[in-house]
Image (cartoon, rainbow, N blue to C red; front, side, top):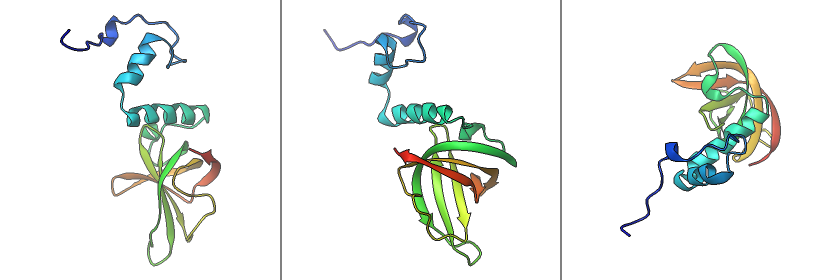
Length: 141
């Protein structure tokens, strides 16, 4: 035998049970051929969907939105001479920066934390941003 040959995903029978995702041959092959980052992104998308949140990728600018995901980074960055706490939220589809003006620290806002945030989406320097969002801490990732 020259090597392991995986079947084409189109040739694998569909069980019709897409919600289970990880069951059956199709789910096994998907997990086998996906990278760790892809699997984490899929899991985050499921989590944010169950929170009733809009995927960040689908958020329109100058519209209010509710997003949920994991905080990747949290930094203190002055804006206009005043402190500003910035956190990058990732939901598996895209990222959005959450910015709290006038804050140096917020208890519970730390990398790896699951957060649900609501506010007005804008774009700054080509990135989606939410200033002073309402937020809910949802546990650790």
